[in-house]
Amino acid sequence: MAKKAYFIGNWKMNHGISGTKSYFERFLPEISKVDLSKKVVGIAPPFTSLAFARKLTEGSPVKLCAQNACFAEKGAYTGEVSPLMLKELGVEYVILGHSERRHIFGETNELIKKRVKGVYQAGLTPILCVGETLEERKLGNTFLVVSEQLKQGLSELEKVEEGRLIIAYEPVWAIGTGVNATPEQAEEVHFFLRDLLASMYGKDLAQTIPILYGGSVTPENIADLIKEPNVDGVLVGGASLDPEKFLKVVSVAI
Ligand code: 13P
Image (cartoon, rainbow, N blue to C red; front, side, top):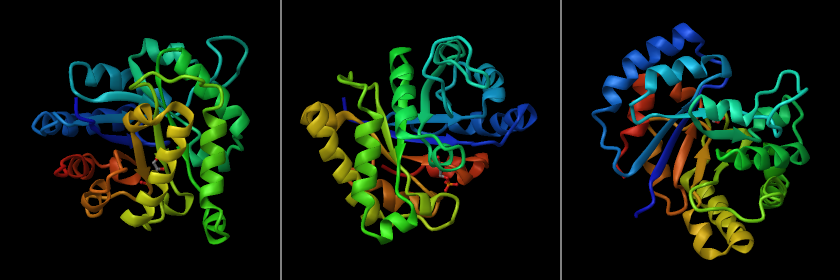
């Protein structure tokens, strides 16, 4: 089967119950008209909107994603959400190690690798995010930073089944800034990450692992980004908050 392209909307801390309702009222009738034979479409609402989003999207092609998850199945972890609870809700993919988790909330590679393992073991698919800051890029440390994040983030996953892992390259300087990585910059890092994945899991499996790009993706720049051979999809923040804009991104010709 040919590889599918992924279009995941990360709503971050936006769209409570009423926002979720009006979003899907506009989004669902239109998404059913888009040819999704070669595409996977997902939305990651905030935790409090997940159950309602599940109700609304049941029977639709939209995959439900979460923005984080605990490493443990249950217990004394105030403020955390168990991967099993997410699974019970019908969540399939979980974003982990997002730069906002790393930089605003101080999540370390050490913590993120535990989350990746917990999510994987619960039968959900982790979307592990990696990406360098502007300063790190300027110092020429991009490959060093993303390889550390990738290697450490995956260090507890000795083996990976096909279809059970997604990587997202999100350069911090491109997130929410309106300055996207150029297709060439994205491809350069994706190529590097693919090679690294091949050294960890073998070439054949590495080819099957989707590597998504995230950072100021819009209806205007999606066509050029998605053309790159190692860009297997996108993780969209701001432009996914507006159903019409996200539909335009998802409708790109591939
Ligand atoms: P923006 O698309 O708003 O730059 O955010 C990207 C992102 O962080 C997706 O996870």
